[in-house]
Image (cartoon, rainbow, N blue to C red; front, side, top):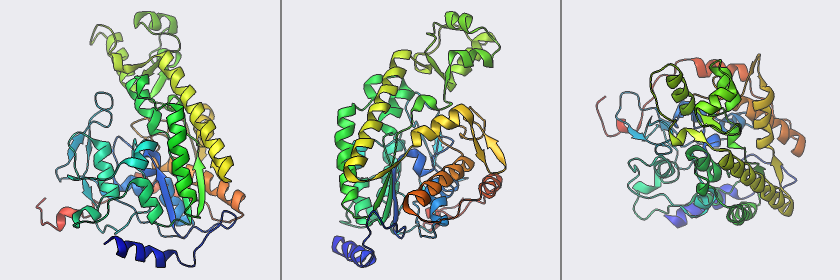
Length: 405
């Protein structure tokens, strides 16, 4: 089986030797996290995957981009997961691969993945690990359908990318190394900068050795996401005085309140519950500062790795700050970076399809400028209309097993 796979990609890649100065999107591969995967509304499903920024870019670049589509559960039994146990709401994450599914996928992005896991973690059986969304999604994305064949090779995320012989690859990694700490409020879950630098250097070196064009992306600061609100913003939401609110709920002026925290504050102000806020609904100022410092360290490391390898970096961190501060034009409308202002989905962590279209255009503009290409931009309004329309529930793998709905 392994020899067959090598043979397939030897012939697929022959004649496609790419250099950094010659842009070729023929084999477009993405190694990333939840943003690149299309994770939204606390889950990963095909409607979001098809409207993720990499999928939209592939269409504009007129290249194939097979996706590891995960079918919306619909009436079929799904498994409930805690994306981050005890912090994010449980979500009905489908564990059904949509049909038809490709033998190989080109979007290898896994929600909440860390750089070290990209290098070390292989898919395993059983595919569905109860209560562990990250492991289950990794199994479904990287290990399917290979895992149903006896003695088939099971690759890590980076090994998979290497085997696809990319002529162009986007590396969007690092969010998972700090997002868990931001959501849990536990600074010990931050990947140390030196460990991140070591693993990220190894990842990029291996991707660079594929001889394709590699585009890196900086790491966004999760405290810029609308999942977190400053004390002043929380007070404005409820028409309260910020000092009074901080005193009543034992908040430091630099603490951040999560979406769950806003709900708890509202309930207490309305007399629906009493007592102090739950520990996990407040991101304390010291932890927030440690997160920002780590993100700065990550991005310094990315800039250094890029410089050493002659690679370009798209400033995703700067783009997210722009969204937070000013909002962005999205076709005929403008979307903001606050909760329910159009850029972020219901989870307040990951973008809507409309926002993915905006990001896709920023990346296409970056590529056109950096590599002297002329790819057309995405019709953002068309994506927004498509996302609002009702999408019929397509067939899933259970149809092969003749499972009754």
